[in-house]
Image (tube, rainbow, N blue to C red; front, side, top):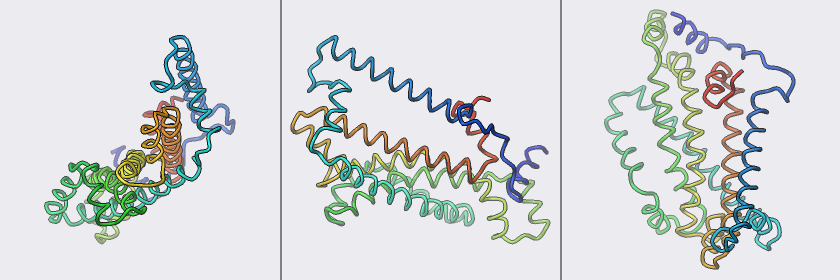
Length: 285
């Protein structure tokens, strides 16, 4: 009964978020940021010390100092190449969220179509994207379109599966209550299924946004003249490992920022789920 009551509150009314301290330095998010920052600093210091102590050649493993020197001191336009990859990632991710949520809704609202749609989705997910990318270049050319489409393909499946699971996870008691009140299928969908699916939708978005970065870079590997993936190809050809690591650093930083933005949006839009998310991510109060 307690779970049912909580679901009804989530579906029918706004639930107040748990009280948080006004002191930013005492917030769980700040503590987690400090832990992550300290960990990264320690890893970089150990990495730097290891490269210097064992005199590792820079073409095998550049020290962090060389990586940052390449990032900030070279003539490569990292801003332009990074913005291209970010643009491809965002467009592919947004398309995956929109069409993935729509496909999940169709599967749940019209169960008979699931037997038709799901096999097609599984085939699209199983086929290696590296194998698809050259074909897309033939179909769509060497512009941004094939990169965006590969990012979309990689990010699409987690959105569909997570959203469909959330839409179908409404408790039977709530559905019986809605039908007893003569609610329409549309009202049941928006008042009960959508609130139930939002936490899983955001979980799928967190997975998909990181996969979208990978998809965009994979497409740039296969055929492109700009983007961080192209920089990595150039770095490999010239044995400029520092340039490759600098590009990897920007890719990772971009993925972390996008992940953090989705997590912040989740805390604002579905505050009733913030406590569970905090426990998973280590926000122990």
